[in-house]
Length: 89
Image 1 (cartoon, rainbow, N blue to C red):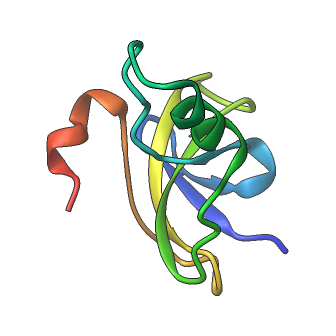
Image 2 (tube, rainbow, N blue to C red; image 1 turned 30 degrees about the vertical axis):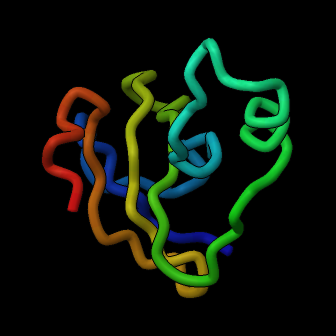
């Protein structure tokens, strides 16, 4: 399914210009138990609704950014660069 994604640097583009990088999740600390790293690496929440995701603009600026997207409708609510993370919410 095609939809438009708004790159924070380049503006609105077809999703085919981007690469999906997975859900935004809290990474375990380096001292975390082995099981925490296994859970982080292998298990995904797969939310049916709005979730934050990583996207890479491979057909444009070459930057990684975060997008809040409804996984059921593909409606994109917000996009931001990692350094703008304090704007999450």
